[in-house]
Image: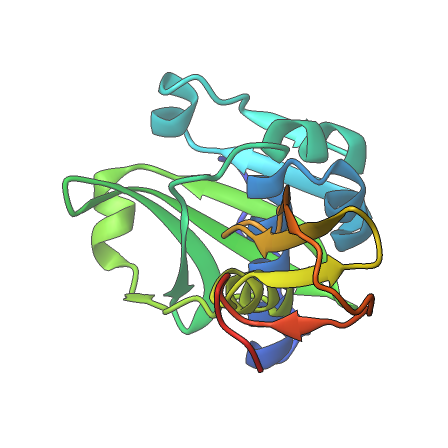
Length: 197
């Protein structure tokens, strides 16, 4: 790599927010999300060790960089690199590639992929616990809820519609019937089948 790292102008908190969003968009294959986080003149550079792993030595422009990362970075973990948010890919507990980001104006202007062991040895790397996104927390909350049933009566049979959310926010519905009561009515209750409010 011929040039040194660009000098960031973002605060540590802003850089962490941008890098975390970048990693999330990369893992989800969110191409549009990646583009929103990349500066129009962004540059991705890899050192000879990382090039040996199959990376391009240099990629310029948001489209090329987004294509490089979309759907990837699954194993990269948010890490403080010399005090600023970056990422690390490790194998067997050993850091193999460091992603060093430079953020300006809320956008990524450069990413360096560093794999030279001598370079990695002098970097101060501090793993960061990634917080679940609001969407992920919402999906988990839904998944923890008991099924919701809407019994509709007034017909020959009661039609029971049960709604349950899975761990990724997917909804599953099941229908069942039971004999209708003597007095037609419509009511809703939440809980497990066989329970009442």
